[in-house]
Length: 236
Image (cartoon, rainbow, N blue to C red; front, side, top):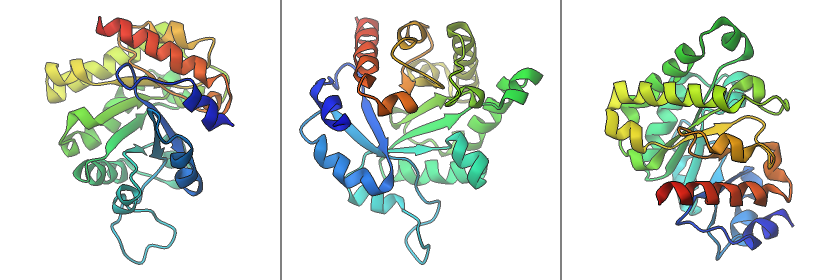
């Protein structure tokens, strides 16, 4: 029903990309359900290895074989619960881009790091780990997710989001040049919902959203439509 609702809102790929990062066991079904629409299905995680005796792992080649065009790397839960290191994320970014996949790279700080004033240092460290692996900037996006705001109902204020997004763009400019930084899409994630997405999306350095729990509800279509309205205006 959710997939039918998302497909039924007729997202326009010329205005915004709509990507659903589905659990691995539901990817094939999800792709079939959204077929014929602009909704894309992505992989929540990929292996840092290639093919071989790696029980339970899903390689980028397998993801590509299924026709999946997007992959998510570095989500905070992968980092904190499964020990994914900066080096691991760099390997996955490199493998994904070499295969021609679009990579959504998640970064963000813990609450203690926000309180200590080290948000920029944390984000810079995570970015620097992968920057040399980015071979196609048109297929690479960053999702800033303050970990303290993920699934907690606590959301960064629009100004907090804007400040950190501007700092991330500045880091990219220093490392890869102004042109790359200007065109790079930096998304905000962390308790985004239909009520706060417009105000967040109006910030000049917020280029979209990585949505968690709210994407599992029918009114996620409101977020899709809001994003399309905001970013179609930005293109004018």
